[in-house]
Amino acid sequence: GPLSERPLLEVRLGELHTWISTCKFSPQELLGAVHRAWSSYCAKYIHVKQGGPAGISMLLAGYCLLSYGWNYQHFSKTSLGVSY
Image (cartoon, rainbow, N blue to C red; front, side, top):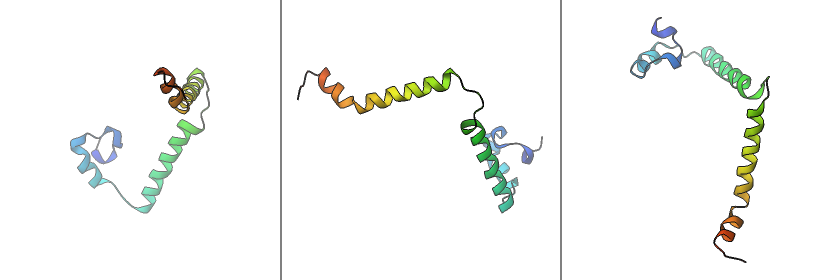
């Protein structure tokens, strides 16, 4: 379709400056774009309808990384044979 009707993700890098010049930057348009972005973010990350093993495994992996980070000084000293 016409360049002005394409979404940003379908615009090629060489066409970006032309696409930006055809956009309307009125306050109402900008507010609508922010609202759509916020709604998309909430739908994807906040209001998740389905749970599953991926969410739980990410939580456990984060906990393991945090625990290792908190105890890193202890682990590094004991692996080098240094005792305090």
